[in-house]
Length: 83
Image (cartoon, rainbow, N blue to C red):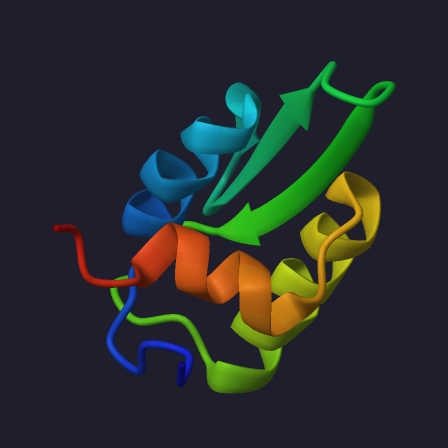
């Protein structure tokens, strides 16, 4: 599955909630999300209307490595079609 091209920072934060990520702080236009699943892990994402593809790919790769999934599997679980 391809990475969505028009995803906002807010939308990504909502999607990552499925893996236990919650916004723990915000500084300017960036949000820091933290999860305690599989040990504590933090990611910082910009709160922009449309995330750049490289930024989104980097965040997804970081999250996928932490939860023990391939990036493609993570993308499928987060943005795949719901039955």
